[in-house]
Image (cartoon, rainbow, N blue to C red; front, side, top):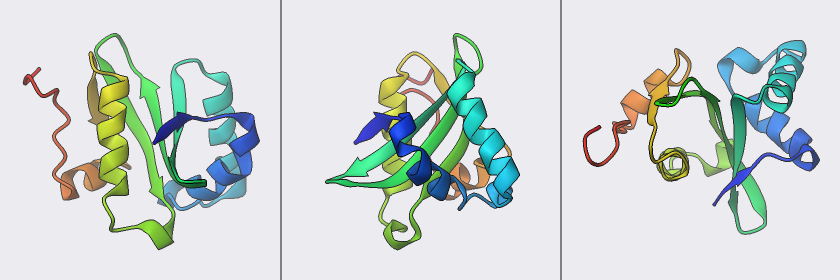
Length: 123
């Protein structure tokens, strides 16, 4: 289940973000968290299964038509189970009127999973 980030989940979110190749440095990681907390255009979502938070997806609302996926991360012990794909599908449901587009860091994941970023009606 996709849930919105809350400050109470900061350590969990930082841990999941740290699995992203471009978020290994602590200062960069802290800066990224501040951006999600302070920039109204950025949204951070967590993926919860049962009582555990095992994934994270972060986006930038670019305009009225596009949402750019900046971060996708799944706890390594839960990878290869379709969780990343499920997070993207849930994000499509959250932003039904917007096209999801990857950034340079998420494009390879989106391509590897062959996830169609277009809405089901082809728009």
